[in-house]
Amino acid sequence: MILKIIFICIFSITFIYGVIRPFSSIIAKVFIMLGSLLGILSLAGEEYAQMLAVALGIGRGTDLYLYLGLVTIFLFISFTVNRLDSINKKISKLTKEIALQNVNKEKTNK
Amino acid sequence: MNNNVYILIPVHNEESKISEVVTGLKKYFNNVVVVNDGSTDSTIDVLKELDVIVVNHLLNLGQGAAISTGINFIKTLKNVDAVITFDADGQHSVKDAIAFANEIIKCEENIIFGSRFITHRMNIPPMKRRVLSFITFVTNKITKMNLTDTHNGLKAYKRNILKDIKIEIDGFAFESEIIKIVSKNNISYKELPTNTIYTEYSKNKGQKLRNGLIILEDIYKSSNFK
Image (cartoon, rainbow over all chains, first blue to last red; front, side, top):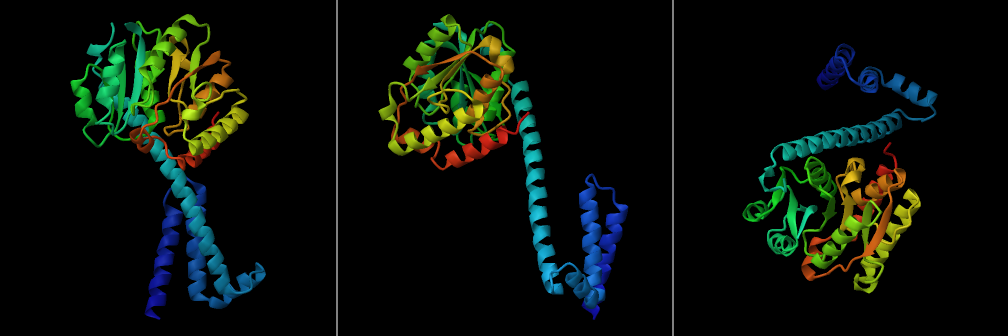
């Protein structure tokens, strides 16, 4: 019971955090809010999760969480890869700029 | 002695070979630019002892990035007629570089691609030959060009086209990107035969065949560049 309350508190704080914090991506904001709501729902009322799963045609509440978990992992990987790509490009640009600024041109054919 | 033809060498961890390569070139070329691409061995110390212009990447970015930086540097210089890119692992022959330098000065074309498949095809190890042929086929299809060897590091560029050579890909597939730029901008080109020297050292240092997959992936990405 204590664990259940702790997790509900964590999901509630996450939800509030998602609402208050400004995100550069609206998808990330919605994702955090929906994820934390589903977390609260699954802990506070298992029967609601079951009803939602039936309504979505998944059948069991546990399968709903399994599917959502997989989607989360794939989305997370996809966002992370994009982010890394973008950081790599910035590092590459910076490295090239620094290299060009530090060249000793004395040996060139003037 | 070629004073206005610059040699551009991208280098990464070539402490044992770079001195020999540069010494061979310096007999015929006054200006050699070496881009040290974040070497972790003593390459940079060796370069400091040589009569070359050193451009130093603090991090290892890849061959495409090194060529890009080198070209951007040479663009800022005066008295440059042409640039020849040359590999640091000793695979390329100085004789070929001289032939490229003479030809790029007198020919009408703006870029010369080196090809291992014109006269020295059988020098290429069989498996590598097949992979290179496949990559050449894919690159030609995507870029609508008609080259016999799309991934040969030995190339010559006239100064006036350096402004068009904007390389976005840091890795091996920059070669395909250059071909795409040539195709897109209708830059005139020709091919010249090169004799690649495959030693045990260069085979170990050179591109691994599995890098072909990375090249294909990069070609796909580059096909999405605007």
